[in-house]
Length: 405
Image (cartoon, rainbow, N blue to C red):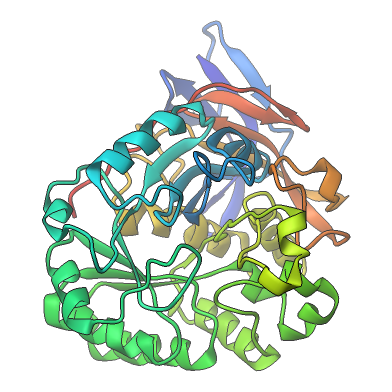
C-alpha cells in the first residue's frame, strides 16, 4: 500500500488534512489517521493535493511529425505539468480518419507515461460508415474552419451526417460557425464539445443557447493562451504567437473569464500544438499552434494565487468536468475506487518558465520568461510516481476507457 500522507484536500469548500491510501492503482480510502500496517509513504507536507488534470485537447504529433513531438516527450511534458490524462486530436500525419490509422496511433501511443485517449476525425472524403464502427474514442472531431491539417468541412449537410453517425462531437467552430454548430447540436440531439472559444460573441452564443436549451448537452472549452495573452502579444512573440484561433482583444479575453465565472465555459484545455522553433520563426509559412501541456496548470495556479479564480474551480474545469463530459471512467475526483491520478502542488513555489528546461520536444513556450507562483511538485498516475521535483520516471501508461453516455 502507498499512502500520500499530510495531504491538504478541499472538503466542502474548506482545506482539511487527510491521508490518501492507494492500492492496485486506485484510491482505497481517505482517512484521518495512518494505518498500522506496513506502508510506503509519500509525504505531501501539508501541500494541496488535487486530481490530475485531464487535458481534452492535445496534438502529440508523432509518426510522420515526430520531429515536433511524440507520445513520450509530450506526456513527459504532461507529467511535469500535473496532467495525468490526455486526449489526442486527429489532425496528425497520417490523419486519424480511418480505423487503420487509429490502430497505428494506438501502437505508437504505448510509449506514453500518462493516461491517453483519442479523438477520431473526418474529411469530406471520409467513409462516414466507419464512425459507427470505431470503438473507444472520446469524440468525432469536426473542423468547420480551416486549421492545421486541411481537414476542414464546409458542407453543412455533410456535417449533419457526421453528427448523426457519432456518439459525441468535438468541433472547431469560430465566429459565425458557432451558431451553426449549436443549431446542428439541437437538430441531431448530439452531445457537442466546442473547442477553444476565443471571441466575446462566441461566449454569448453559447450562454444564450445554454439558457434556452438547458437539457441539451453542449460544452465549451477555452485555452490558456487566450486567457493569458492578447493580440498585443503577437508584436513581440511574432511567429510564436501564431495560432488558430488567433489571439484576440482584451475585451474578448475578459469575456472568456466572465464565461468561466458564470459557468458558460466548462473546461480549460491546453490545445498543445508544438512546432519546431525554425518552423515558427519562418514568418512566410509559419504553422499555427503553440505548446501548452507543461504550463497550463501552473498558469492557472498562478491565477489562484492572484485571486483571479479558486483552486476548487480550477479542479472543476480541468478534472471533474472533462471526466464527466467525455465519460472517462474512474477519473476526475479524489474518492475511494477512483484511479489514483494525483498531483501534489506547492502553491508557494515560484519558478520562471525557461525554454531549455521544458520537456516538450519543441523546447519553447509563448510564456517563456514569465515567473509563476504555484507548481506541481509530484505527479502519480494510477498510484505510480512519474514526476517528482524535476525528475521523470518513464513508466508506461494505458489507454483510457469511456462510459457510454
